[in-house]
Image (tube, rainbow, N blue to C red; front, side, top):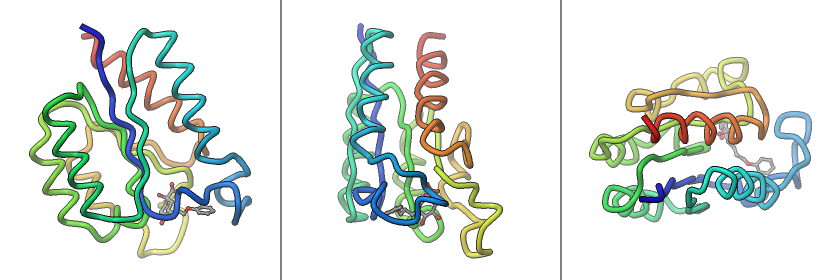
Length: 146
Ligand code: CA2
């Protein structure tokens, strides 16, 4: 069976590439999606690449992933630091979860240092720019084929 991986992006990431290039680079979220599609095609897996500015929508996608996905890659953006609701939804997902941050959140403001989502993540990647998504997807493919 071909695996399906959900790649979920949180608030404001739809504007990636349009502001703060020193922190986040100049690539857009569409560029990230294209990179992920290429990796998925090569590995013969499917991805569901999603972005929302709404917490409830992210939670509903995590619930859908319980039914159909082999793993979740998630950049919860600012919800990483605030959302117990997203943590609770991920707690109900019993397959691999990889958390991605484009920037190194530990090198930034103190309020970014804690991520609730990390408590449930199999692994966390931060500070590699958008390459973090590539690393996460390649590692997720490894995890799903074990
Ligand atoms: O480094 C990351 O990937 C973050 O998850 C990005 C979030 C931030 O709140 C987290 O602390 C770390 C912010 C996403 C904002 O998206 C952008 C929108 C426009 C231009 C640049 C980034």
